[in-house]
Image (cartoon, one colour):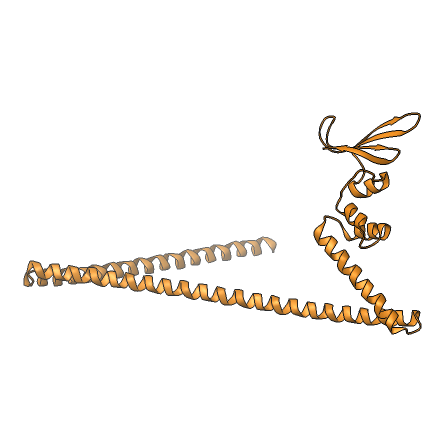
Length: 254
């Protein structure tokens, strides 16, 4: 039973293959016939054009052919010029669209920035209102005293912001140094600006210039002498050397 079914399967597969080959052969023959017809009609058209040319050629003098040739050149040149103008117009249109898109993006970004700034202002105003209310509660609703406190806070905030923009210090460093050396003092700004001077203490020097790269220490009977070295530029060579005696700056060498 199985053997007969398998033979039937092979027979059906063979017949299908024969049918497919027959269809393929029919398609090839059809395409060949179409190519033959196309070549025939193309040759007929070329022969017709040649007959027209051989008929017209004797009718025109040499200058007629020259004029015709010139007309053809002008026609193709004008067609190329139109194509070039069309390309230029398309390029101008593309540039115009890109400019419009750029303007739209800038406008969207401006609107977004304005919205963010508005939200930020509203949050800041709400924060200030709450802060004022808290100060009023802490100071028995003495508005004159609260206004003075808020004015001092604003002045300190502006001073802190100005120092941040002027010197290479983070807000964390500024808060630490200003809390330690107080606002609006010359010594605080000198230390924030990383300055050093004769008479400066070791602690002030560390806050100003940071920890040294190396320290030469010499302890004598009556005093302690140290040389703080900064910015190593080579083996055993430093850009800045500051001498301290008993933790006070007494000299420096650049």
